[in-house]
Image (cartoon, rainbow, N blue to C red; front, side):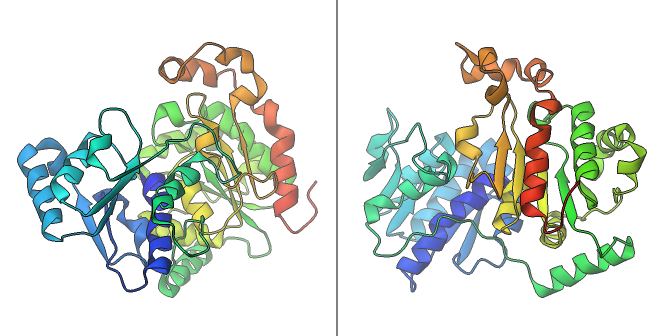
Length: 349
């Protein structure tokens, strides 16, 4: 997924500093490459495509392609069946991944898969950085994922703002309107209230992040917003692809909404974020850089811990939609207003 690939790129970034003359290649799903454009820490992107998942022969061919490179070091941040196969075929001199029962023999170094974060970086960041520990790098580790926006992309985003007559005298808020699936999407009727909170609190421009195929869901949220809120929403201002979204996000001041790729991309652009987590997603993993000021997040468990007693992830995922209905926007209205106050340079209402 987009967020995983962007966050895992910090491994490449730190390796580049430690080994400036090395060749660093990154194996990723083909749909995620836009978040890697412009990253000089990566020499080659190797694509994992649908054919590699569907065909054992194609997966074998990919493994043999990797083997030909004669890598000195292989770091497996994915650590699932598909990557295990490629690790086995790679013949890399040194192989690092997480310690997991039944497959430790594949690697020369197995690092603990920590269950709890030690800092405000979040487990998603800490776990990936732990894969660098066996190398004992003599550098200052940089934990922050980075997105790179070209001047052309910035100019195109500015032109799109001008085309839609976006008010220049107001700050701009991006709403991460929909998650990657329904089980990761805050109920639409609740999200409209969140958007109302934003519009009521601050005089800002509001952009919706959604794909064209999600138009009806986006309209549902828009139509449920108050007229005063609707007047601040630039509903048709959309990027045509991920790179254009990144350009648009770079022109925004902050992001609010569902956990997912949009939030992680915003963080990669150093934008403040307010995340609404799905009930079945563990906040401790993806609440990265949480500091109570620039990065805040909310989870139903923060307000109704009783609903999570004696329930594992599988049970929570099965009950996600009903649990979402318990996650009232009123729970965190004050927290959203606090977030806006702390990250917008003018006085809010």
